[in-house]
Length: 226
Image 1 (cartoon, rainbow, N blue to C red):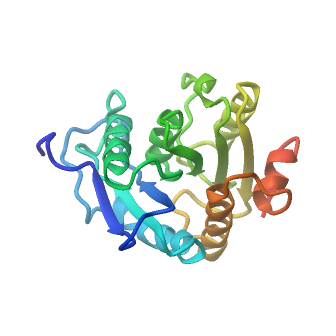
Image 2 (cartoon, rainbow, N blue to C red; image 1 turned 60 degrees about the vertical axis):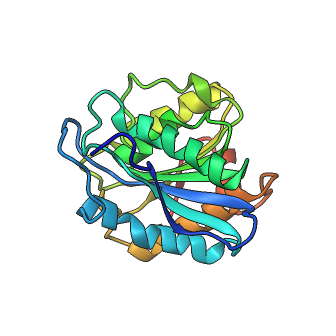
C-alpha cells in the first residue's frame, strides 16, 4: 500500500459545512506488515459501532474511519496513520471537533493521537493499554474506556490503570465495565452500542454534561458497571 493513499475513509459527510466528526479506528495485531484491508473482520466490526454513534449524533457530522497501511502495531504505525487521517480531515472539513472511537489496537492508536488539535474526546473500546504507554499528553482531553470484564485479550486492569494515569495527567477520564462483555464486543452487543452512542454524543458537545454515563464515570472513584 502506498503512503500517498488517503488515510481517511469518509463514510458519510454533510453537503454543507460539518459541525464535528466521528472517526473509528479498528483493531489489528501486535506485529504484522501485511497490508490492511477494509474487508477484514476487525475493520467490519467497527461499522455497526459507527452507525450506532452516528444515529444519535447531529446530521452534519462527518463519519469516517482510519485506513491503516499495515495490520500490525509494529512501532506505532496505526497511530501515524491516524495522525495523517486527522490532518486530512482538517484540510477537508476545517477545525471540526472530533471524537475518536478505537477498538483494541485502534484504541491504543486513538489514545496516542489524543493531543491532536482536532480531538475533543476519545472513546476506547476494549483498548490495548500496555503499562509502558504514557498518558502525560492527555491534559484537557475527554477520555472514556468501555471494557468487558470477560476480555481475555486486553486486560481490563491495564485500562483501569491507564484511566488513573490519565486523570493524574489532567484528563477528564472515566471507565465503564460491561458485565459479561468480551473482547469482540459480541456479548451484550446492544449495550456496547447504546453506551457508545451516548458517550460519543456527550463528547461532541462543547461543554461536558453534568449528568449521563460519561459524567458518572468521570466522577466515580473507580469504574462504573453496566
